[in-house]
Length: 547
Image 1 (cartoon, rainbow, N blue to C red):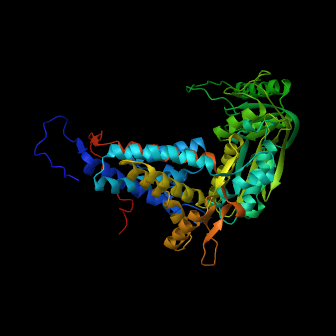
Image 2 (image 1 turned 30 degrees about the vertical axis):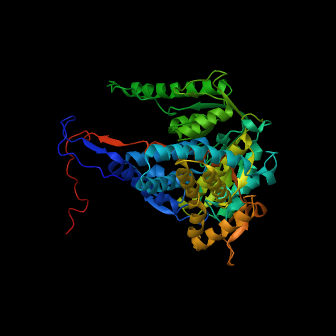
């Protein structure tokens, strides 16, 4: 490759402080290097034996997780090329809800292979052209590698095939227990037409204490606190939902009240009380027997609500309040007053139940449209609860993907090895310079079985040679990595063992990863302006007063 000769002096095009990186050496290879760093961070978290990362974000919140989506969200990536990759993985998270790690690892590997081709002397445009051909062929081959189809989305054994492997990648060892919970919750809210399945109808509530074996599914919406007043149960409840606080209203401006005698003082406080009583009496007259507030409840308000036999629940999360509105068919009101019939919600049962040592409030609906299920997660530490929630989220997202497209491919790295074999054959038959790029694209798939083996502490080279041999003898594409094996073989039939991946998540992941890699390869110049803002104030050492 011809070396880029640096120019002696640049004509003054930009203001002082601008950075201008140009050419393959400065722009493309530096971008590839940054993306390789990012993909190496999450590569060790891939698969059931993926290592955990301890990430402390800018708010000093600690995350201990092997979920790539969370790691990347909490790492503040500032490199412009690496940001493209972060966006691609976030898009995968929104589209399918799983395989975010696949996108980053695969894009990183594609660019590593592209770096070798660039150093060999190929032009970025030639690599892009070859990668596009290989991507289209890979998606075509992927359709042929479907080994199982979920025909009945309301059958537990059928759904288990798809969900189990996804949860095993996050919570290895607990996949049977958690997959059962996810499917029980999904089936309890599955509409008549499975295509209308809504992931928002499955909530996760985390309650500290006990162990993961105490997790259970509760039909209805669960809030991890008990009602504020003395009323703890309501049947066929009419519900009013308020975002304002149930308390004496404060005036916006401060005023002065001149009181001449004790009688005026009594009248002043009485007037306030009568006003409160009238407001809650109007609620009771409207037929409301459950009030949900997104803010505080004053003592006086609570006294009147108890007298009127109205159940009061405090829900501090705006997200949960919106979800509850959807479940009970209510509108959240910003002012205290009787809601109209349209703004009022309805719920069959509102009750307080005890889970472990904690008392929680359950809103339960019997009709189909707004049925919700809540998975109550138990565990010893907050980090463990968070990680279990992420595993459950992935499982629920895969149920959603399966209701749209029930095709499954073999897991455990088997599909990637078969894609590699068939793309290499396609590359051999392709004339011209594109074949180099197509072969490099094929070889990038090798990273998945290799990573699965490395993370499980096995000899990756030995596994890969056995997988190559197995796939060349057999065209079914079901031989994958056996991470549990004690023997020398280290390979298994993923179809027989029941390790499946969702075809739709693989297909989107390949598209997003390739698009991100091609976008980076098409860049030949980076122009960065000087960051805005003046000099930063000096930071004071937190321990400055210690000797």
